[in-house]
Image (tube, rainbow, N blue to C red):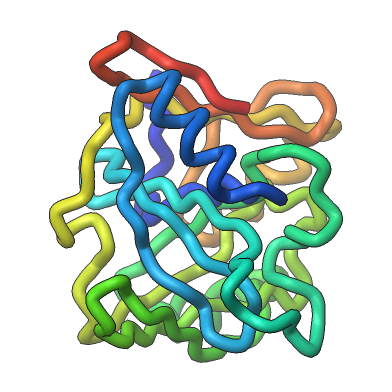
Length: 210
């Protein structure tokens, strides 16, 4: 069975302590994630690792060099007590058409909004994504992203730990499978508490994160 979802863009590993999580990833895999950049006004920054196949891992946490944001940090980072895989993103060929088609079939991926991040070299990247207006609350249904004219993060010379699999558990997998199909993707699901697990190849051998 293929356990890498169709159209996978990236996996979000969120953490309350970015430096510590990056150090732990480096220790376990032997690969040091590259600094990604800061999210101005959102109080977060990230480090990135390529997963192969045009996908990447985003390790996201609070940015101590930014002032506290006006609202909550993205992905519920403020409420985390440990690093967790919270959600994932897919990159459809046409974001707006995919949103319209999903709504026509009864699932609303949320409104499309613009985001930006300043890379460590000072370059400002802009992209569009769905804001999760009415997503499945577990994060198991992905959000949608369109990088437009911006270079995709996976094409920026990242260190790479090839993705072997991305799987998840859900209280009712049959509830989620139609929503994934509406978005043109899939996810290997089994019954259990809502949670993700992914495994990468590394110089230290296969390493699993959950």
